[in-house]
Image (cartoon, rainbow, N blue to C red; front, side, top):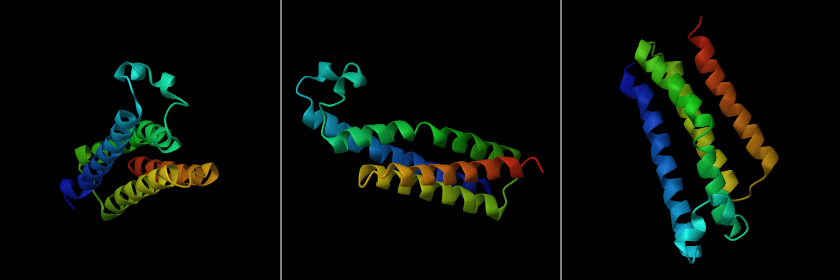
Length: 133
């Protein structure tokens, strides 16, 4: 397998993050009367519709766990140890993060989000641990 096969899921997750950014920006612009009100995002809590706050929270989440995914995936590409299983796991992680986003933006069941979150960490952990063997 080549590096492009492994890195394509990275680019897709980045594009997904951009889509969440656009949704968040739309909501904030639409529901903020004075742009200065958004000088500190903590000041927006309770002023925005729930979907805007959930989108904002999800945006932040896309810069937490996925950072470890990016590092592990780029490291695997760098050492050129690209096996089909690693590509499949990278795609699985991206699918898990998209599902996590969709759950958070819609039904927002915290226990379900936690299970999805834990699955993501298991994928990252396996990808990292497998490189040590």
